[in-house]
Length: 133
Image 1: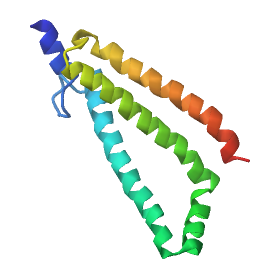
Image 2: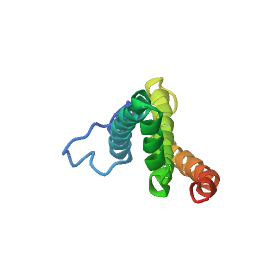
Image 3: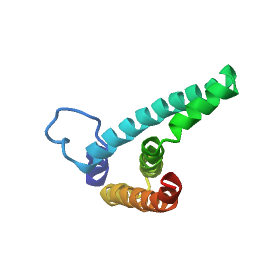
Image 4: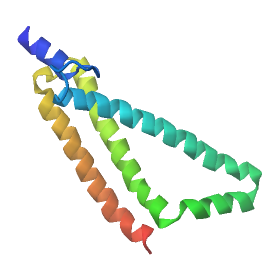
């Protein structure tokens, strides 16, 4: 029973309750929702960019020219961080829902953060030479 209650507290929703604020599970919850909203926003932006092709090749080329600016291209690394964290934390949540390692949720959260950092480092290492060529 204590293990079950612990997993509920670690997986707590956003609230002003001082018992959950600052806990790892609360941050995991907030970050999962935030990264999800950011990914949906990116998807709409991506569709908008692709739909500019319907206006003609010149318009599409101008839009792609703006998107290839080094600052915007560097934001791809930020996108990778958002995507990797959302995926890794989502796997952690699926394992929690399946009842696997419910008493190891804090460690699994930090493992998802580690996976994100390693993935972003690899992505940056591969992308930076292409962005600033």
